Length: 222
Image 1 (tube, rainbow, N blue to C red):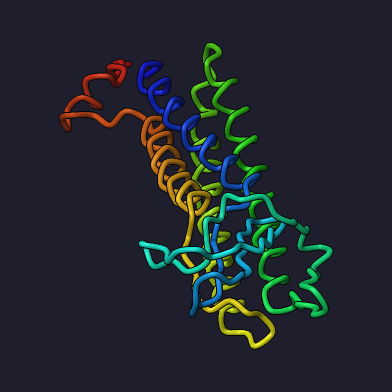
Image 2 (cartoon, one colour):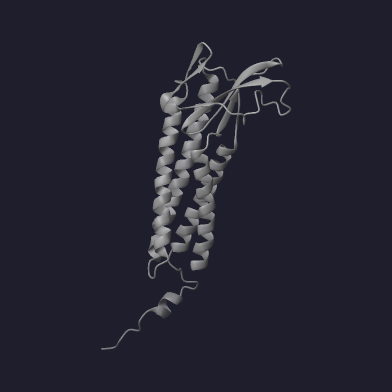
């Protein structure tokens, strides 16, 4: 059993790393207006659970991938969603369109982090003698963490859709970036790890029906 737990722990570490990368970065989705002419500026944005970064980019040539305004890796101005107003020259772009969704997704991600911490503590303490029973709650905690992160992913998808559909924003094109991929990968790894720990912690089932009878104490005759 320790070998199975160690292998599962490695998968858990990878899943936790992917989740932490998704939570602390701002590249869940990239938004951009439709580029209709060259030698002009466009306003692109990328955002994560906590803040949105808006960038004004001068377009010299068309994007071969057809993703509109770019490249998005240039420096720009970032604003946390709790202070959700960004200024573009004389116009004010209101962020009521998706702010509540992002705050909800961030709150759900915090629950996922809590479940991950609890699961990690249970796995660490389970390596002690006679503490295999801690693997069962550890599996449940990691499964709950995976469920929370996928719920957060879905909330972010709704946030992107609302921003794109809103008349208050200028963006009409979008694509999901590497932070979004990390969140989806962490969901898969944490769910599989949680199920694996639950299966490992299950009591041994007899291979043959008579094993239980053979292990039973013999009856004594009075």
